[in-house]
Length: 165
Image 1 (cartoon, rainbow, N blue to C red):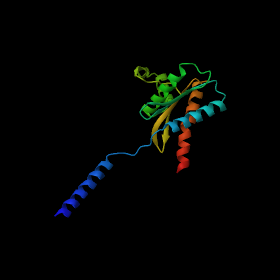
Image 2: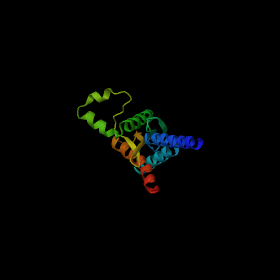
Image 3: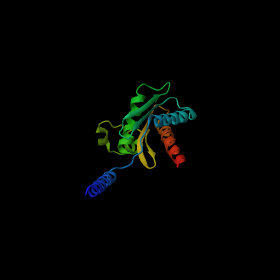
Image 4: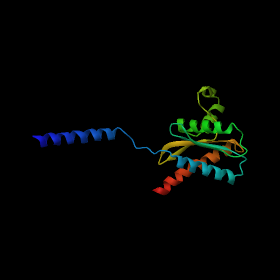
């Protein structure tokens, strides 16, 4: 009789384990090492473009700051602005230029959202199709250049992921 109870117990445990597995998803995550790669790529692009400065912030998928770096000669508020751009990009899962354009076309009510920085220069970081974080840049020569540096940073991990396949 004991072997039947043991067999039933095993089947029940395996069934419960399978049900638990089906209710979860596998996600990629952003590490400090990954954030440093993003920043390094953005800094390299800034040097390549002779940017006069720039603050580069990287946040995880929840909008939590992982790393920030402010290049020499960047205005003091640049760091906070770059963090806001990164948070906005990750929480809405789209580049912040989208929101700047929407507001410029008349949807000014969006400016009332809390913790929302609708300024060009925030880019989600995608790895294997998943948003794992975002990078925000502020203080380069222009809003367009902010975005270019952010794109270079975000692409640093996308390239690494593609090479790992």
